[in-house]
Image (cartoon, rainbow, N blue to C red):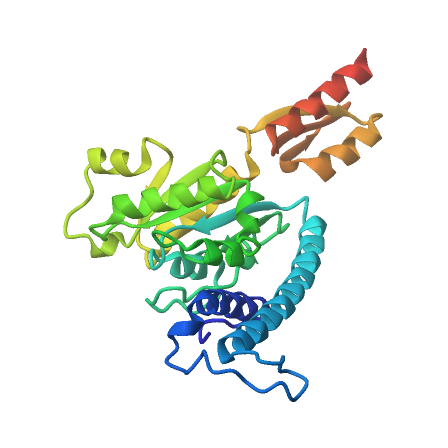
Length: 310
């Protein structure tokens, strides 16, 4: 449990450990078939040591699951409160460099040691310095043949994955098993119900490559989907990636022009509330906006203005 920093992570790890131990009680090297006495509040009459331990484990598991459910309900409430925030989520095979990339993108100091499951908690930070409308989350690293009991323990932690506007699939480009790691990641995303979410591949650790990846190799990894090849230590490349993630998470259309007459004051308020104002130029009759944002929102604003004119 040494990598578990929060209460949620500690509960997850203990549940996984006890679920692993429960069917293996008889192999613990104890005289598990010896009957215990019936005295005392914790002992049943004629109960074997294995039966007593199994009952104690079941009680502890039930207690942990109740505590986990309470935490889960509290986090669901918090997520509903962030419904208007776009989420980009870093996912990928364990030790792909997700946390190092998270630190570079958000100027945080999360632990990024090269050990499996160093990140057990989902950590979220604002990716945009002004406005805070895009949140970036770092998640637990995936592994091949993830046991069902461990998957169940981490499903709530990985709820951010299912709610993401954009999945940033981080791949260790220098790992000789990178193709298998991508396959594992995509299979687990399907299992989580996030197989159709928009993705951006980050082929990380480019500084460790003995030679640059060929276009054919990159296409084989990404299947022609959007990608970036970089090192998380390359500040300029990380800066470019940050802007790309923000634009993709916002699902922004190209800059859109919209003219709002002064008398349409209610539309002015909607423009500022629902779109990102790139430029606003005053004219004698109104304001000529250059806007960015969700294409559906921009289209709705344009339609509302057309409806007002007719």
